[in-house]
Image (cartoon, rainbow, N blue to C red; front, side, top):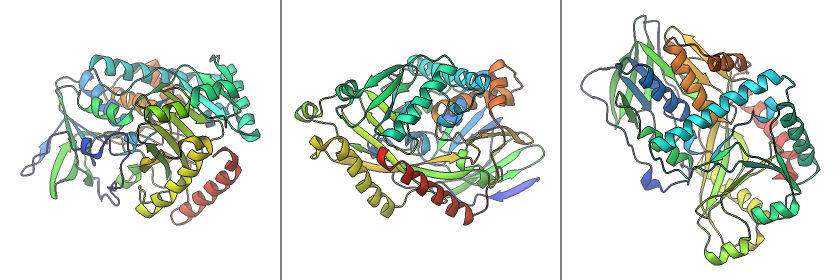
Length: 448
């Protein structure tokens, strides 16, 4: 064996998102064999949006091959089911600071291809996930946010992306709050329910894909001819072997021995309300089905869903154990409540029904990784908080690269990816990240 390693930290069973009732977050795949070693042509580890796209594309390109898609938790429990439900076509805020038009255009091509792929899957497989092509708002509350918003418009001009500008009155009419001074609307993004999308994708895999969720990998052994993964299912350990492995593990990649000290697991938090009543909708005074991101990265994301629920997302923390503690959520919900009432004092009687945290894999230099990390082992990680689109396209292209295919899109992905910067080890990493996050929170305090 070339490498044998226990997985040090497993995904925690912390509070899942409130996008669906907990009763709908059950294991949906089939159990692995517990009395013998299972052998597959390919193994994909991680069934978030990256792994879902990778497994599907492997199956399409290699219809005679067997593919195992392994996920530690039930599908939709992990990070892919914890986001705010945006599929964003545009380059990330940090990318937009660049003057490299060719790079920005490549990112735009990759993201729009991901949106097209996902939309086709939702249509072909009739996935009910509240898929809505309404675009998104990027809004500001004060001078700092307004300056960021103006920079955003200049970046859009550089890559020839059309947009419209909304004033306070137009925003109040749409969102039901007059707190925002202005916003930029871009039409290319999509809103959806991430848990329903992830589970719909997993449930519509080609026949040569075997989904095994609720199966955390506890050991990864890399050999010359095949890799062996030891997984645990309902307390019983069993082995799965494959000559080729795709790690779609994002922030957990270092637990498999790769990209160590190159990603910071940062957690952000969201709360969602119950559906508003008819009377509360009248008091709210806005529209259904919109999504707003802050022009200031440290600000608040806000959504009104198709089923009358308001979602609010803000606050960040370092998450060395990859999850949120209950006592942490008790403090977060109070901060979310304050942000909610600042925007909707007329909805004081509307309660949150769920508060949760979700992990992002961030790099110090804002660089994402894509490529081969060892012989017959591939990885795509560190999507820097925009993992639905970037994860989807990187999963697809990772499958194509591992299958020996080349394309202009793959060249785009290779151009915009690189090596995440090296970080100091814990506890210094945690101290540094928390210090940086506190500074960012103070700078953005008027936008939260």
